[in-house]
Image: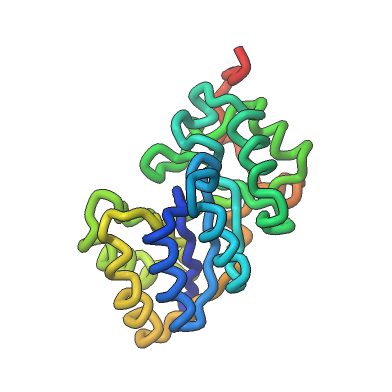
Length: 217
């Protein structure tokens, strides 16, 4: 049976996140929200994240500003540490961190050597993905691309965005279709998408780290 893990990046956005929470609650589906610190600090942002956590969803760190990939010079303490401090007790105990991918691509732009050391030393869990249907670009067509990925993979970690693009209007229909097709929707993340867990490197990460880049230079 195919498995699907739902994740939402770049929020919280009070209106859209609340709508997503209603859709998930109606179907008794649990997800993970990787929040941006700047959005969490906006009016209504923290309240939405608190409601997500109270509903059983996991909350992860998706950087403070979501502006510069850490492998391209993003400031590690400002992007990871400041966001984590802002999360406080909202954070999942595993200190889930999802790096800014610049369009969802996996590669050496994700982390610098300093960022990698920081994640290990501070016992973060690096949470990656294997499906990015680009809902921010195509608010209606993303669902079909996501369905194809779910059908072709044993376990799909889907990246969506709880932002006001109109894409989340199709979330309920997408979930209903996957459940009807026999897909098991789970909250857990597969080991292959967690190369670092609680500060322990469990899989090679060289492909994710920019060689010789010092984000503090």
